[in-house]
Image (cartoon, rainbow, N blue to C red):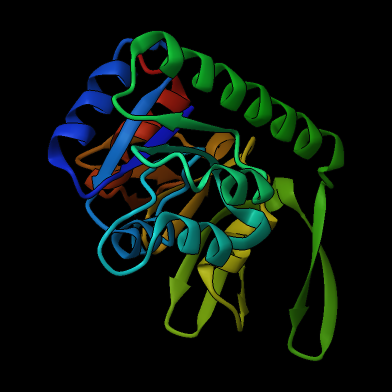
Length: 231
């Protein structure tokens, strides 16, 4: 379970990071001072949980939550203001924690978030298909997920690489990533999503799949190592 801390107060971010560091299955993958910074970061890497302040310069935490829509991460608001609680819970957030945050209250909120995340993952697992439909020139083709080695962003197109050929689709890598089950695929670079079970080796900062190197960006390396359970 990874989380992003979003707060314009450095001391508040440090406090939350220290508490999160004591929870075994919780990993802080980043900190942001503004809601806009958080929004931009989430376009490039998946986040399970947001520890989100409300009153920040520019966009507020409530505005960010509304903008993210239905596909947003699980959200815990951490704020010194009590008056936003009703509006926050109308947005179906996991919890609303008043600063200064004490460890017991923090763990209670994390437990709620974990239950929601586990429930979402189970729903995804039950609903997963083993194929997707793609448009290949004038043909709509069924492509089995087991055939996909990796997806590569190429300008306005995404190449879906299989063992013997690739399919070029006019779309974004983010749109493709949202269609691929998280249980089987992982983003390793802003331009690449790979099938975890197709990885042969990792060497010189790159993944090798069927003899083809795929770069791994530093921002995704830790998540990849955890996913592969490297000893």
